[in-house]
Length: 167
Ligand code: HEC
Image: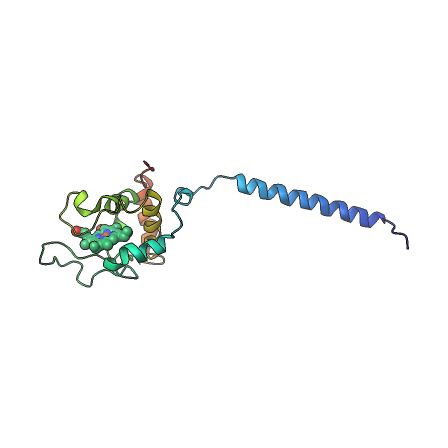
């Protein structure tokens, strides 16, 4: 039997070809588009913020960031125990820049007697931001006076964002 390319079939094929080209170029534009979220652009390394939190922060701040039960009561050394980072404390009162400084420089680096270590030699710039972004996911859905604490912290950070990478 001879194959006859019927008019309707050829136009169908043409339409499919156009569609394929359209999709391919669509994909190309999507890939070329810049990532808007600054944090997402960073190379956080192979570990996710959650993994960094589990290995580096959870020993003091708790597996779920719940902090020490008596976090507001100074210990024998006159220093405060690890506070909750899960939104139940006041971590969300700090802008991204301040949070970055606390993790990078530690409490002592920022000039107050504190047992919060400095992580600037242990974590990269991207890792510090990744772990802080993970911490913020623990605030999801939490509100104060009906206002999302995540939104409030975002507002604080608008004029005080994470510092740019220096390395
Ligand atoms: C050796 C225990 C220890 C480890 C490990 C530790 N922290 Fe802390 N952290 C503390 C203590 C203690 C404080 C309270 C500091 C103070 O107020 O003197 C604190 C405070 C903080 C604060 C300020 C919280 C607030 O509400 O003001 C942030 C943010 C924080 N830590 C994040 C982290 C992150 C992220 C990690 C992991 C990369 C981490 N910490 C690892 C002990 C620790």
